[in-house]
Length: 399
Image (cartoon, rainbow, N blue to C red; front, side, top):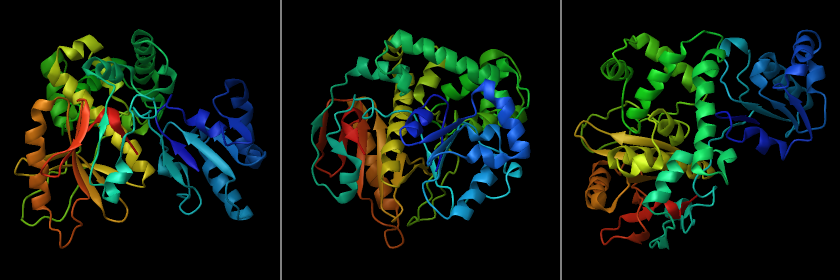
């Protein structure tokens, strides 16, 4: 199994709970010796009780093919757990690992995993056809703002917002000053990195392309960063799992309406955006628009976690008529459900109308009808509207 995801999200800690031996490639004292063994007797690095954890395997890319070969030779399962915080260029490996190495993407913790969501409403039950929902979120407006700024990082659990913010400052400094360059050995400017991350934060939860980022940086800072540079830097941020955009959903429609395919911008966690916007919980409370965008990104983070537990994927929908849906959960069997995300109660009616319009556009002779339509909110109560649309506080949802 290969576990990938951003640094600090708990990959190693999780893997250690299952591993019986460990090769730690973050250990600088042993790295020189491990590199030498990789050149001469690489299979010595694979020796140990199984499952053997190879932590941050990409430090020695040749280990991938060695693991794949060992799995072929032994024809057994459960032999290795690999973790990685960086993607590796395909030219550095000879085999994809298909059929031998199962990939699992790990993110930061959802509200339910943090113990902040009551879990009274299950995404799985929505797909099973539940007809009623009920629940009461313990999270008020202020609590949600704190949850955004603190983020879902395991090391932030039990910390004050100030302590968690200081941790995020260190994490984000590492991104701009080192991680964005060490990902592929290409030197990148920390100032440009920060400008790009700050612009992406302003465009969070929106379909902002690289040209728009270039324009935004020039407008906000007066500094010119060419779109090719923007593309290169964002590509590097994707490789270290910091940028995690939401792809477009392209269903079969009844009409010839054009579907917009630009992804919506998201980070591994909305706390990254809060940091680069220099936004405290109090700032968000007094800026409902920005709070709404970061709340939507937090909701997408949680929906992705719950959907993954069901074997599903998450997309967004936007078409040429201006109709949008913030998150479409699509299961492997073709079933799907749609979410709109609204921080406050004032937009619930409009969101419900949008979801019903989407349902009417999908060609149900070639596509499953939706298993559910739901509005995720920052409000108190979960309930079913008279039109069948569910209203679900994010603080009540689980997988």
